[in-house]
Length: 139
Image (tube, rainbow, N blue to C red; front, top):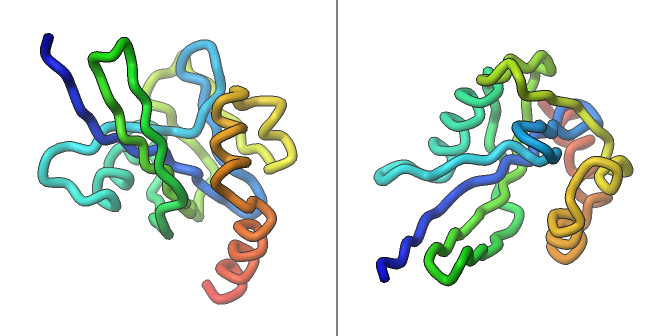
């Protein structure tokens, strides 16, 4: 049995006091995509987000990593990165998808329990929001 290992990015894109979530299928999530051979994390994140949303983003920093194992055949190393977008007009790759800019207190309303657990275990959202206020001030 051939085993597969992939690396993918997940982007927590920040604009003013909101984060971008998309609904490509049945559930809301942060935009994500694969890292191709030879790409840096920053370049992969910029390219995938541009392709999915039309946004030009600035990758600020990695936030946390998660390992996903599917059917004991496929392992995905997912790296979540904090990103900034000056724009808030999203042009989704697929017209059937939806998007919203949500505040951090709305995460539980839109995101899966698994993603909420990852965020709670790995991030201090209040600190990120405070850091982003300083980022805007000095930008």
